[in-house]
Each structure stands twice: as structure tokens, then as C-alpha cells.
Amino acid sequence: MVDTGKLYFYWRRKRSLEKSLIDTTCSINIFYKLSYPVFSRDLQTVVIGIEEDCNCSLGGWAFKAIYKKQNGKWVMVRRFDSWIS
Image 1: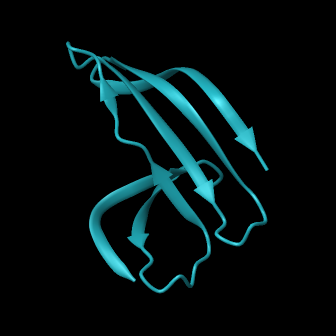
Image 2: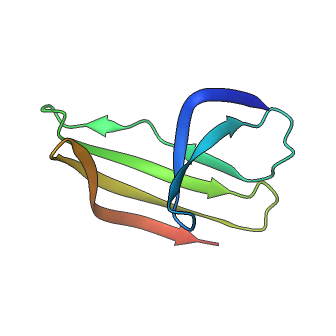
Image 3: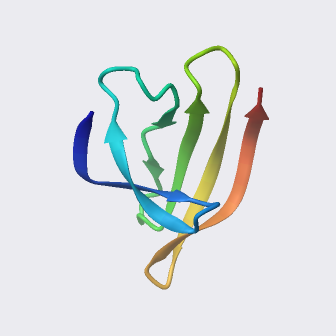
């Protein structure tokens, strides 16, 4: 495992930020993939893709989302292209 030091993800069930690790040994079997963010010219809107892959052909999920910056925080305003397998 590689400690990224600064990467965190929001764990909805725990309602907290959890430290993200890079698994270099394939021992966890669940991977989260983020697309490159695409920003608007004014940097107030972004589109990003998020995917969970169990790395064992048993399933996963993904979606794309549009976020807008409101009062200094990123707020999801639309979710699309969702799938679960």
C-alpha cells in the first residue's frame, strides 16, 4: 500500500472523509476510478466520472456528475450515465 497523504474520499455510510490509499498489491479488490475533471471557462462548474470496480468480475457501479461551486463548496447539481452491475 502507498499512503497518498492528501487524497480522501467521502464514505457515505460513515458520513466522514476516509484516507485514500493506492493498492499496489491488488489485495483490497475494490478500486475507485476518477475521470479527469472537465471545468467550465469560469471554473465554477465541473463534470467528473466516478467508478467503483470490485476487480473480480462481480460488479461495480459508476456515474458522471456535474458540480457547481456555491459559497466556496462544490455541490452536485446533476447525476447521469449511472449504472450498477
